[in-house]
Image (tube, rainbow, N blue to C red; front, side):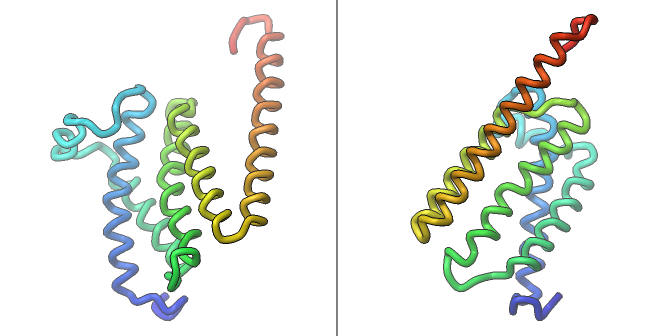
Length: 168
């Protein structure tokens, strides 16, 4: 682990410490997003002192994921070389939060989906500054995913309408 991508061991420790705080935020997101309440508020800091139940699991998951991301991508010398690492560091807590919310409540919050979509568009723009072909491919891939998502949603909705018990 020490020699991979010439990353110093203290960088792994710093990433682990940052991941602990991000894991705490993910635990807070899992509580606040299904209720459609403000994420960062005065209540956040008051309850954060007491602690959130089961936040240690989220913190451990985020530490493992962040260290794995650092191991896979390493630290580059320029911003463009670090862009994949930054992208996954931003998206990974959202994906973990959406997985845990879906597992518990069987819903996906619209705010979370829209935020991930907007971040994807932002990174597409940043990639486009360096290479327009990469941005074009990312936009086409994103458009294709959205088309498939809406086709699946409409098909599922029509199927549920046909059921006799009236459930959606």
